[in-house]
Image (tube, rainbow, N blue to C red; front, side):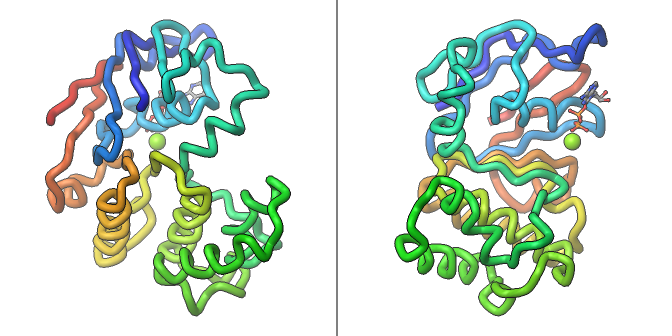
Length: 219
Ligand SMILES: Nc1ncnc2c1ncn2[C@@H]1O[C@H](COP(=O)(O)OP(=O)(O)O)[C@@H](O)[C@H]1O
Ligand SMILES: [Mg+2]
């Protein structure tokens, strides 16, 4: 679905953060992206989500050369990529339900066509009783699940999650991991950026390890 060939990335005139990074993300795959803090995990996710351009190398996303993707094409391609940011990015003046429905509302879809999907997805992430509250009253684990539901509402082909267990206790981390595994079993590719070794030990999955700008994949 997505492939990187000898990708390099530097911010401005700074040093190369990623060097000769090559990998593929196959359909329906499950992988962890790991490496120490500052290794470039978030940077790699931003390249995958096309919010950054590589400074060299080739990125192919759903058969398209990333370099040929125009601003106009971005929304259509991004709809196939769900992303959960480390800081959630929920809108504080909207309820849980409205936050999850937002991507569809922005597209001008009629609420009647998606209302039950939003409710069902919120139940699936375990927030059936938190649908009509504002984000301020949610715990870290609850906010994380709202962000996951919002990333999934358009049924993307791949879900990217940046340190999804960074702010939750181990039982909640385990619960989130079960959600990602269930999602993957239903056919969505999943990539989780994490430095949480305990999390990775709970599941057999590909590990993409970043160190000193290089990426090594362990299948
Ligand atoms: N917008 C930016 N401008 C300049 N340097 C950045 C920027 N974002 C990240 N960096 C640097 O890139 C490196 C990798 O950061 P990041 O991708 O956030 O790593 P990780 O997510 O693995 O902790 C770090 O040295 C960081 O300081
Ligand atoms: Mg990061």
